[in-house]
Amino acid sequence: MNENLTALTPELALLGAAVIGLLTGAWLPRRRQWLVAVLAATACTVGLIATAVTMATSREQTVFSDTFAVDTATDAGRLTVLGGLLLVIGMSVESVRSHKRESEYWVLLLMTGAGTLAMTGANDLLTLFAAYLLASIPAYALAGFAKDGCGTEAALKYYLMGALLGTVLLAGTALLYGAGHATLYRDLHTALPTAPYGLVAVGLIGVLAGLLFKIGAVPAHFWVPDVTDGAPTPVAAYVTTLPKIGGLIAGYRLLHQAMPGIDVNWPLLMAILAAATMTLGNLAAFFQTSVKRLLAYSTISQVGYLLMALALATRTDLAQQSLLFYLAAYAATNLAAFAVVTQLPHARTLKDYRGLAPRRPALAAVLVVSLLGLVGTPPTGIFLGKIEIFSAAIDGGLAWLAALAVANTVASLFYYLRWLTPLFTTGDPAPAHVHAALGRWAAGTAYLAAALSLALGIAAGIALPVTTGTLLP
Image (cartoon, rainbow, N blue to C red; front, top):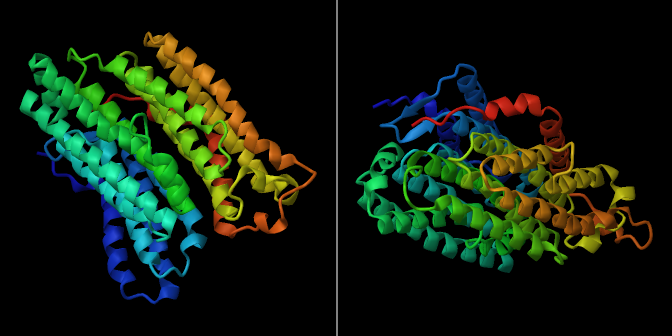
């Protein structure tokens, strides 16, 4: 039993900062609670440094009776989650400054971030369920942080669906344990091929249902538009981005490590879910007028493309590389778009963005980069991510899914252009107060996230090697 706590430095850094922040926040005066934000950013930085050291020294290992794996997928997920968490912290500064519950906001963000990190390395069904709870419960509180009507409704819907599908995930775990007499992926890999087909099928569907909720995929996507619209914008940015990283990597590891030898045709199931998710997300976004709801359905469609990698988990070596790179590119690009929405709190509809380019050209440029990036336009990172994942689909024998994904990509250009076109409207611009900016932190976050999106596309030769490597058994 390898009880090497240093292997869990990023997770422990976030949890330790959460505990310290909770204790100190109870004593700090309201005007000094920004110190907890500094603590949160420091914890993320420590996690990034620890991950970089692990990758540089090639210290891949499994710890605590092999229930947690520190390998390529874990390290890539850590880099993306911790980097994304820093961006969310940056865009949250003005939104929660001097709030009466400011320290609690940072603590909740750290705790749900730690749960997301734990999901990326979970190598055991019980570890996965514990990480699912840690990632979910603080996020429910964050969704209703504003305590207004829309936020309360969003938090309630988020909680009810999470509780239901979390219970289904636990039931699926129990069924797979009954079928394989183990919860460790390595042991399930050996035992499940000879277990009863029905028990394995229902158990796997139960576990996948919980993960589909976490990533916001069909048919567990119903919470996404309401939570995105009702929660504070930085929280919406978080829940539509970072939990997907943990859920998708956890799903990939489960399918790749525990399910390759079973008779259940899960690759076809995942391919169908990917097709349904990308298509529904795009169709629902077509005529949205609320910018937050448009981004909500956009994120559902993006999950559809990412689910293609899970369908290919055991069919091609390109699946892991495409998934990890796409996740990093998506996180930077999606957070850039949400940072602009955060910076312009009074611009709630597409019409409110009329004439933004002449008034705030830098923010308009970020929005152009992020929205065209979400389509998959070069030289942004998502362009290369889509090329990688479409190539993996063809290599893995799912050419029909790649063709559908290309068609959906072309179709998605319609609703992104509906948002971009008003930016350059010279006649009848939105009133000046609608374009009033929130502050420097949200703007700086927008510029940084857009730069990262472009950097991942331009310097992909540096980023792609980080995503290659085998998963530890």
